[in-house]
Length: 147
Image (cartoon, rainbow, N blue to C red; front, side, top):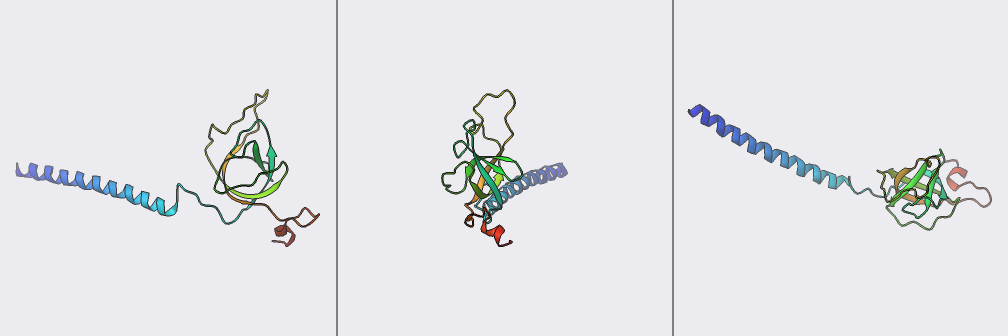
């Protein structure tokens, strides 16, 4: 009988310890995530992707009807930005960094097509630069200097 009471006592202590330990791990995970900024991306220091601005009245994005086309042909659908952006013009070349996001149904295509519209990649813009071009060359300063 004494052995059964001891087993129940230790089992209860083990359950209490387990619950406390799990709670500790959850809190530690949240604190470390806060320290690392898991849910709050910060602007990146290096804009590393050239894009061309495309205006399309069928698309609704964070920037109105503005989409961004990368040099390799991907069509980016801005859903958010970590900084204020200027008004962009059709054909304008800019440099950005971005994070791929889950598609938000708020930013969708509003036109009816016979064929499916081109696939877009939903993004949050984390860095934005308007490259400085040398007069009449169409070459930005980074490319011109060989970097």
